[in-house]
Length: 202
Image 1 (spheres, rainbow, N blue to C red):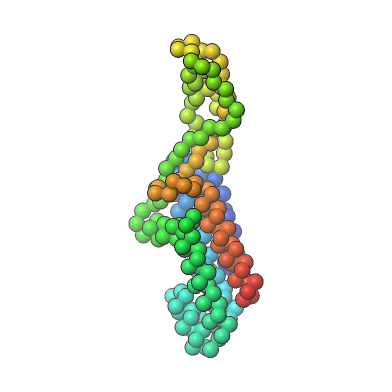
Image 2 (cartoon, helix red, strand yellow):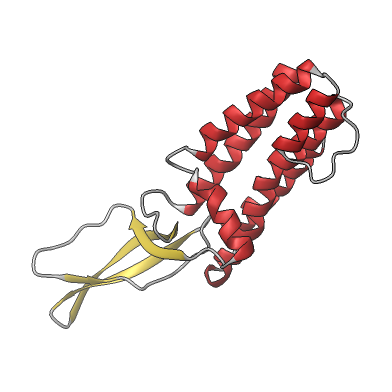
């Protein structure tokens, strides 16, 4: 059951994204994408073993199916039909499906590009005629920092403002869902895929 080991690896890599210094977040994304993507490959191998298909050089859905037919293993054929259909749904998912392609781009062409945005939250009150200066504090993606700003009326300091600041990161070209959320959903989908495979065919 090496697919389960790959899930643990992907969880470890996701934690790395949450705690990475911001200048290397994209380098943490790379091994996460590889580990999560390989869950599906390891699941294929797990079921090739489970169905006693023997050694399959260059294992993929095509070679799995070919061997299953050659051995007249009906259950293995049903599994690979299910596997293809279910994975197609994930690849076409409008929230995280692009990560399948992004992994190939990362491996063969370039590191995924990320865009960072600083967000502040918390109750803040502003008086008419004043301006507020809040220092920019970029935190690792899974962390918040307390920041203290200064309210001014012209050049005169009239008070202080406290807020919590956190850094949000996005994949370039995908500004609607942040990296932590999309990677978490991507991994959860893989985990659900593995769980359902064992439930139906294990």
